[in-house]
Every structure is written in C-alpha cells, then in structure tokens.
Image 1: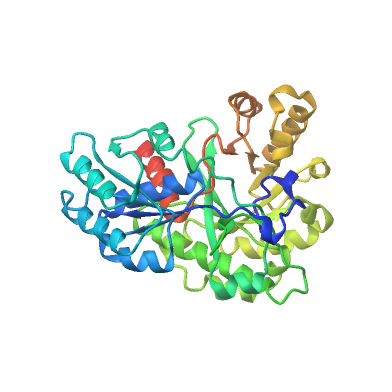
Image 2: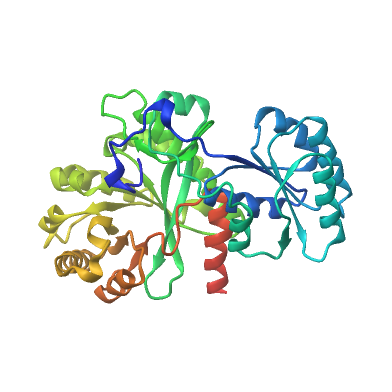
Length: 403
C-alpha cells in the first residue's frame, strides 16, 4: 500500500539509534488559515509541525517540546507579548521567530522584548514573504534531512492511530487541471514525523490485511464526504491488495454508509499489473462485481509484462498507469518512449485512460503529452498532500478552472 516512490532506497534502512530526528516547529496564531499555511510550509521543509492558538502554548511546551516557535502578531501584538513572557517563565530553550506586517511597529517591539527576555530570536519574518525569505530565516535549521523509510509494524501503527491517507492529484495532460487523485498511505510517527513506509503490504495470511484495508476505505470515504460538503467532487484511487477484494461482503460493509452524493463519483481500486497478468480471470470476476458498486479498477506499474495485454479488449480496467521507471528520463530514451507508446495504444483499444506516473521534468512532460497520455502524476505538478492541503491546493484550483 505504499506509493512506490523512491524504490532505489528500499533496503537502506538506517539502524534505530542512528536516524536523524527532524526538528519540531509550532506555529502559534489565532487565525486558523494563517497557521495552517505556515505549518504546511514547515512540513514541506522537513519539520514536524504543529499549529495552536495562543491559549494552548503552555500545553504544547509540555507535550510537544518544539525546537522552533513561529509566533504571529496575535491581537495587534499584545497577546504575542503574553506568549513571550510565558516562554520566558517556562525557561524555553528553543528558538523563536516572529512574523507580521513588514511596517508593523509591534513586530519590532515584540522582537526586542523577546531578546530582552533572553530568548533566542531569529530575524522577524515580514509579511507578505517569499519562500526564500523563510529559508533565509531558517538557515540554521536547513537543510532538514528527510526521515528515512521505516519498516512499520501494522498492528502498532493501527492501534496508535499513526496512519494517514494522503492524496496525489492526477493532472490532465492538456488542460493541466486536476482530474482525480491517488490515495497513498503515510505514517505520522511520534518521533520521526511523517514518513513513507519502507514496506507496508501485509502478506496473505496477515491478520491485519482486512484491518489495513478497512482503514484505507473508511478514511477515503470520510475524506470524500468532506470534499463533497465543500462541493469538491473527486474520484479517488485506493491502494488495496487484491486478496481483500475477493470478499465482496467486506467491501459492501465498508461502502454501505457512503452518501449518494459521494457514491456518484465512484472510486477506483489500484491493482498491480502482475496480479492482472497472473490471474486475469480472477481480476475480471472481481471487476464485474465492483462495477455494480460504481467502483472501477486501475492497473498500477504497467511494465514489459503489460504488453502481453495487447489485443484483449475485454480488459476490466478504466485506467492503465505506466510506472515511473519508464517515465523518468523518457525524453532521452527511445526504448522508454516505445514502451510508453505501446501502453497508451493498449489503453485506447480497451477504452481505458492512460496515466504517466513520475513526471518530474519539463522535457519528460512534453514527451508524455506528445505520446498521448490522458493523465499524469509527478512532483513537477503535485506531491502527495494531507487531505486539508489537497482540498485547498488542488480541488479549489480545479473548481476555479472550471468556473
């Protein structure tokens, strides 16, 4: 159930005592949208970020112990002074960065107050600011090394509520507007922050096979309801093991409470290409059952074996995704281009959409577009995002384009 990113790093797990711990940052601001924005930026820089309002500062010092506190103006600076005094009284030994209007006298005054209180103060961050301004202020923390892939105990992650479902947009190659999304599993570890599991697919006899699948479906349904409430409609592809789909009663139990507004969008289930090639009859049977529930199948990581699907017009799929190993560097590789063109042709013959995964450069994008791919995924356009950021950054963008 991982998103197959950075395959080349698998197996290079850093021993427990030698992993770098990412710094912790806390954004203190009473305006929810402002602190969410800054927390997202800090997350992208590699911090473990939390956001609170001024009333929660004592609690966050005790249980989160941030290395960095990013403090907003808070009621024209008066409440910010109270927070600074609280930090002084609590003997806070981390670093503080104030942000606010560039011409604000309160910003300068509070910065001086922090220095007089003996706090370690970074230069104030005047708003509006650019990313390079933030990077310059945080130079002493950067670069933050990303947390390494972790082998995850599924029972531990499920029981402790560490699992999250993030979403990566699929982008229309012609309009560059988001069209659907793929769900990917992330783990928010209490020490290492948000990490991508090193390996995460349970074995067939694993008692947590259904528990993990239940989490993925339930979380995706809940997020879809939230998106629909804001009039954002998106078809989500869920990474589920084929074995979990053999039990249609399990699928029905998970889907029975889905609102009609969400059900109309439908879902996609991502199936590995090797499973399709090895047992086409089973996949076809499962696909026919899922189709009655408005659920389609997308083939993931179509490789050379996928070429054996050519000519089979009865393929039970609605999307065919070419893996990143054939997309990365395709602009300079005729063999990769030929493989991609073959899969695009197979998808057209079967009535499925073709998806290019791992588009990260302008040159690869131009080739992918010219080859006729319908959709693309890649860091060049959108990384996997937590639900609220995905809704704000991608779904709102699609809505604006349609409007």
